[in-house]
Length: 523
Image (cartoon, rainbow, N blue to C red; front, side, top):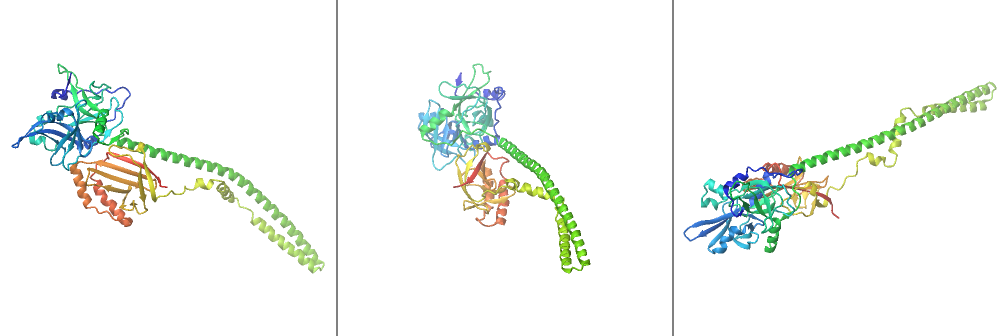
């Protein structure tokens, strides 16, 4: 039978159940860093009664932020508020110094959903919703505040209304079964009383459902299964409430998979370039062989022609010399001079014909020139002209090389200068990995590291979803880092790059999100 509250013993027993995935399906395993990052927006929802002299806890459950001001939970968690208007609702985040008072702004008992709005200027870290289809056997995690854990820890009322880390459990989507009352997801991630209203997360930390209730058998011996309200129900509920939450329908790809794909892509590109170079070299060698044969025939022919011409001129020299001798014996001075001059000219011509014959070494040079003079030879041998590396660009997300969980997908216009200035206002730092800028905002718990490679026209944004203590440490380090103005020079850009390394040393090994853009020159 179905029950709203799940027995603690069944929750513990469910941890021992071995999930079964269909043959041939490889479930994507949840990244603990993503689940921890999503947990920043998971809150404890408390119902408190105050009589002016003291306060008492009437009940509590779990909720999660869908915007900085709005929190989703189960309708049955806040149902006491509708029975007694003296009760107060509050949300207690997992980090910080306290909680916030809230009021119910939407209530739907049909599908067990409710929406709270924080009073005052309190702000929470919203979770991202997954708009795609949840597959059978998918790895999921439940995050919340089960009462059996609170009981085991001996927590007091003061503890329950103080910031505490949420409890995380893991399981799998189990078949396509749903409750009859409303659309749900059946899964095996253990939840207990107090988890009601908490998120069911996919491997990327995106909300795929709202945990609501579980199963229990009459004898208490069967394995426990749990139901989460589906995204179809939640999306319709938020739309009717006029709340716009961030949603993503991109597949969940791990950073490790992206890195592996990048390595394979680089190896493929290198192999392709090597194959192209080898093919060009082979074609050139074949062309050289053909040209050398042609050059060899031409050079040998020219050498033979030069030698024959030199021999003929030597014969002519001897004939003219003999004539000069005869004319001299006959006392004919003018004829002697003409014959002697002719002999001298012929002798010089013979020497020139011999000397001007092409050498055998010129065969290789002439063959090289013949290949270089062929159409297209210079274009294939020389590098392609460099593309534009400065100016305005339009950068478009490459989904195959990206992991997007919390950001909107839009084209990014940028303007880049040779000295590392982005959009005429932000100087990037120069380090061993190129140009980058580390952004540590005050208004959100996210650190972004942006890269731009002007040679490959690649713009990359990596986001790290940080906890409160880590963000405070990063902000403190940022105060020590002074960004130079645009145009400060390479020396200042390198100094800034070294200074940013101190902030990057505080970041986890892998980002929660990586968005890689391909940039083209803007019209």
